[in-house]
Image (cartoon, rainbow, N blue to C red; front, side, top):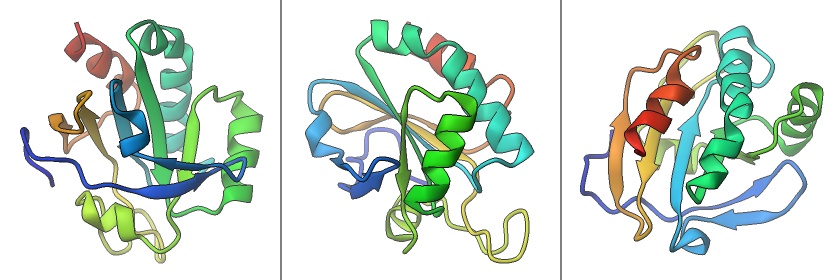
Length: 149
């Protein structure tokens, strides 16, 4: 896990639409960077949908939301379309960013799935403001939002 006050590692990952995103490209905005095990699984769907329900409130606070898993772009696209997710899903099949952010764990929910549920709230300068090592998918979005006020 990264520590509060630590500079968040830079990343360059592709989203569900094939567009490349980086942390440095978000300077001047707060970033919610949440890592999750797998698209279209019960806990991950709950977490994504609860974020989607209040996404406008994140936008009102000038907060960018990125979901990250090792799933490929096609999987992310299908997941985002199925649940009408308005935020960006980033694909990290090499687990490079997942490891850099301390979200890698062997066989988390099933063999071959190595991303655990971890979230970071990153400030406008790229510094970790808050780390969430234990996440309840059903309440996590509201918890993050309350930490922004």
